[in-house]
Length: 128
Image 1 (cartoon, rainbow, N blue to C red):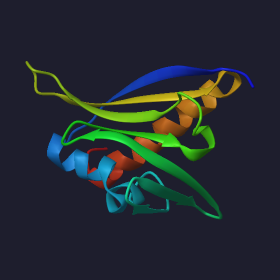
Image 2: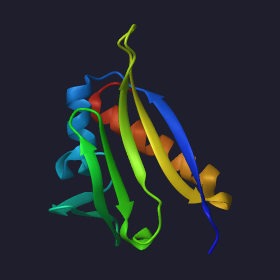
Image 3: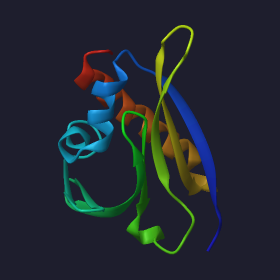
């Protein structure tokens, strides 16, 4: 199995960090932009798109700041995806930093997917 490579993307976003955190950390918030439906039972989250379903384990979260998941298909691997809220101390500009791991031949596709997902989030927040 080939190694996945890590990539990070930054997206400026017009929103308060507190509101943003609700959209990245709760099943109802994630259902509005990340997947068609999201359910959670403790640390296990189920993401549903059309007819497919993926399970992810919540690895860590810090209120108002970040959330980190590992897809169950990568359960025995060091891979994860993280959505982090960053606030510039001087300008107070808010950004989302996405960290993800992907097969090398799928990086461009993954970046486009994240761009679309974050675009959906901006629409939901009214900051598009």
